[in-house]
Image (cartoon, one colour):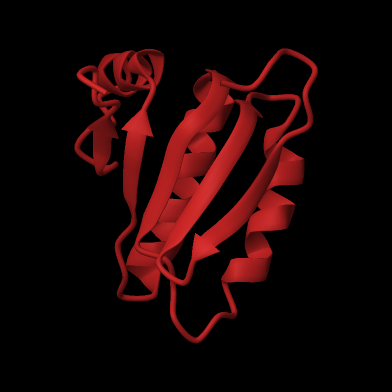
Length: 110
């Protein structure tokens, strides 16, 4: 998990998987969104966004995930968000947005 104050980034693990690291908050989503645009023009779009290394996430972070999913649907694609932190799942459920995101919780047995 990223430490508070650590820089955020988004990087390709391979052609199908993107890893997001750091906090997804009102302070960071603009930068992360701008970084994510580099993947929009790829010939092969990613399938999965791995959130295992995401620290704190607030409603602005969830809005970023919704934006990514909206973009994907608009382009005939779908993203899966793996290793979703429990607090993201709670925010999505309270916001009645869990059906819009393909969230997969962290594997607690690992």
